[in-house]
Image (cartoon, rainbow, N blue to C red; front, side, top):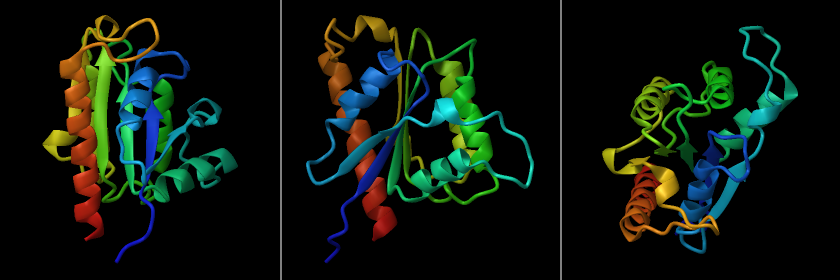
Length: 179
């Protein structure tokens, strides 16, 4: 019997603590079973610009270790200038020569006005990193600001159901990965 507690890491593509992406990440995080540890990573802002030096800064090593020790990753990103937010892409670039994301179950939620271009771009990057992201672990939420109330909670019942589906899909992928 496996008694190890499942650990999910949340990564917001926005550095703003009150962003729509971070609010959705928190809402989705609350949907995990009670015996699952869910922690949002807050290191992106401290990660220096990527370079292909042999010297890895300590904050980058910490980020890679944080990812490596997770059973699954839940991303929620906005779209900036039709692309993936720079701080997130920069952090992911640092992980390319590691195995932090190899066979790691991931889910991707994009919460933006449109979001389709950033969603596609990050999906491609996550594929290049060797992650496991089945179709049910991906959600594009257009017009996000119309679906969150003043308290930062999801006000759209259909969206809440979609978030539950993403969480369930990620949990199933993790279970299959551990089995």
